[in-house]
Every structure is written in structure tokens, then in C-alpha cells.
Length: 486
Ligand code: UD1
Ligand code: CA
Image (tube, rainbow, N blue to C red; front, side, top):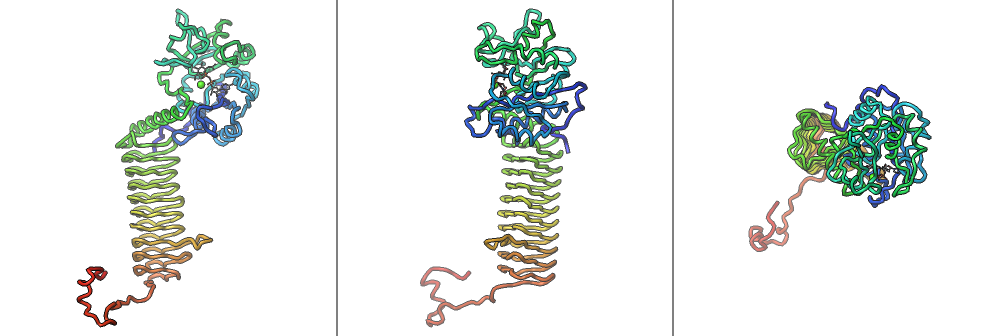
């Protein structure tokens, strides 16, 4: 199975001692949410989850995450994703320089390379960070900034260079002169530092600026003043450093991320008929020659095997689809679909569904906690809950596995090679043996031994409705023009 675009595969560890600081203390008022901005999801992961996945690719020596606003949410979330991360608490958000100082004091880092990233840039790629950190180390800079050239630099810190092209300073929008505001090279906010320089410079950052904050960006000018090397490395793909501040931007980044993921899968050999309506989350894995038809959503940890055809109008979350399977207009969650199996159209596969190879879950069928053996079929209009069906059995149309007695759920077992009639009700707990059959309309309350035929209900009686009144039966149909026999 190809390693997809969202893979968290780690590269070899950096040769140097690398500390990564993730700034995640700021508020997110424009999201207008009770949930921290950093926990809002795109592509099946929180924003900070994407950043941590990118950081993981570098295999750093240590990761420090600065939390503050809504840290009761952000802290446990970070710990669940990256148990080794050190949490540093920034009580009041006095600026990015202050946040990094808190992180350095908490971690006690004094040597090596320090990389600073933001927690709300979900498109950031580990490979880009890695390249930046390596460029920084090769240049032996005191501080390096990851920059980008954009058409609309408003709001960003501008990278000020001298006539030789050397970086002189980063000036924030509010503190910039009109001439500086014309600069289109912006600081992404992502920095790499020599740790010794950083430890020395942090206490020297002032807050005499438009926001009254300690700006991390001031380290650039301070390094210059001390005659140290400063570098800016532009990243062509500026989207990688974009943050989402509100839900409109969240959706934009979500669409962009999806487009990138879908494109990468196409390059890896997956056919996607309509990329615009196909959604694939970061942790999904697809084999070559999978075909995805329009309006398909593959979510969570879904895995799809070679030559499977999914869609149209299908959403699968945390599902496993076997090679050559066909899933049409279906909704599934935590279900396993075997090789060559057939699902849909219009099927609902709830958690615990396991369909064996070459099996079938057909039209208007709902399954839950149901193991359906290889080659077995539940083709039409049925509910299969809490059941085990052996290999090569066929369940008649309109069958209900009545698993719930109003208080408890019970299990139904159907053996191998059984053929059950249409419109049956299996009242659990009940077992239908290997090779057994049931008649149409049977209500099966007692076990059916292997090879037996179960019928239930009385024999059919045909009652002549008119004979008692002595009328001529032949004239009735004409008189009423009504119900014929059925
Ligand atoms: C920052 C940069 C700017 C850059 C821009 C890119 C500074 C002074 N400016 O500006 O040059 O172009 O990012 O997006 O660094 N945070 C904390 N604690 C704080 C303050 C901020 O953790 O005390 C976190 C925020 O949660 C956020 C990040 O740091 O994730 C950036 O802070 P923000 O105030 O948004 O900086 P900008 O003004 O956008
Ligand atoms: Ca910002």
C-alpha cells in the first residue's frame, strides 16, 4: 500500500540536537466557538494535530508546546497525540517572544537548534520544515526565518533587506513605514535559531511597539546589531504557512488540503473521477488502481485494497475495503468489507460489520455487529444486527434479525450453506443450523437443526367471503369493481 500524502513517516533524525517549539497559546475569538481554534478539524485531524504530524517527521530531540488560552482543551489533546511533548504554560499572552521564552525556560534548552512553529498552520509539511532547518544549520545563522513572497502582504511582518539583499529586520504591519508596507516578502512566523543565541537574546526583546508585545521577530534586528548571521529562506508554497482564523478560512484550508491529498493519490495510481467532490482524509490509505466515483468520502483510518471501486455517493469512516470489492451508494463506519465483496446500492454498515470475501450486503440493508461469512448474501431490505452467518448462506429478502427484546440485545447464528425464506423474523437468541432452510414469512423463535426446514404460522386458509350469503361469487367483482384476489 502506498505511503500517502498524509503519512506521518519519520525521516532519519536530524544530525543535530533539535528542539521544536509549537506556539499554541493564543485565543481564537474569530472562530466563535466553545472549542479551541486549534482543535477544529480539517482532513480528519485537528489543526494542531497536522502541525504535530509535520513536526514528528523531523524526529526532533524534544517538542515543547506552549499552551495558554483554553489549555484545559489544548493540553490533553496535545498529550494524546504526542505523549512525549513538554507542555509549557504561558499565563498571559504577552507576545510570540514571550511565548518562546516560556518554552525555553520550561524545557531548559541551551544548545542545538530551536525551531519555532505555530499550532494553526495545518498545511505545513514536515519535509518543508526539515529543509528549512537544514538550510539554517548549513548557513550557520544565529536566526533564520522561513519567508514567502505574496501578493497581499497585509497583516504580516515584512522582511526588510538591505541593498546587498541581506536580511536586516522584520517589521510588523502596525509598526511598518508606508515604504516597508510595500514589501511583499513576509515572515511566515516560522523561525530557526541557534539555541545559545536565542537564550541570550530573549531577555533583551522589548515591548515598545504598537501592540505592546514581546515580538519574536525582533530577534532578527538584534542579531544584525550584534553582527551575527541572519538568513531568510523563502518557501514557494506559501499556503503551507497559512493559518485559519475563522471558519471561512478553515473551509478554504480544508478544501486546499483535500485537493492536495486527492492529487497525491492520483499520482500514486488511484483513479478519481471527480476530484472536486471526492474527500479523502489524511490517514486514509489506498492501493493502486482503486477507482473512486463522484461524491465519495473516505474518512478516518479507512483502507482500500487494489482494484476496489467505491462510489458514487459513498462515505466510509474507519472502514477496511478488500481488493476488488464494489461499494455503491453506501454509508459505513468501522466495517470490514472482504475481497471481491459487493455492497449497496443503499446500504448502511454500522460498527462491527464484517462481510467475508465475495459476500453481498445489498439494497436497503442495515447491518451492525454482524459477521457475514465468505460468499454469503443479504441481498434485499433487511436488518442484520448481532449476528454470525456462516459461509455460502443466503438470507431472504425482507429479513429482520430481531436482536432486541426491549431490554437486552441477543445474538443470532446462521450456519453455513443455509437458505432462509423471504420476509423472515429471527427472534434472537436463536440458531439456524448448517444447510437449514426456512419458509417464506417464518417467525423463527426456536433453533432450527442442521438440514431442517422451518415453517411457522398456520397453514393458509382461503375463505369464500360470499358463500354464506348465497350470492353468486362471479357477480361480486363487477358489483364493487374492487379488490381482486391477491
Ligand atoms: C506573527 C508574526 C508576523 C508573521 C505572522 C505570520 C510576530 C510578532 N509576528 O504575527 O511577523 O508575519 O505571525 O502569521 O511574531 N502566540 C502565543 N502566545 C502569545 C502570542 C502569540 O502562543 O503571547 C501564538 C498564537 O497563538 C499564534 C502565533 O503565536 O499561533 C502568532 O501570534 P499572532 O499574535 O497571531 O501573531 P501575528 O500578529 O499574526
Ligand atoms: Ca496570526
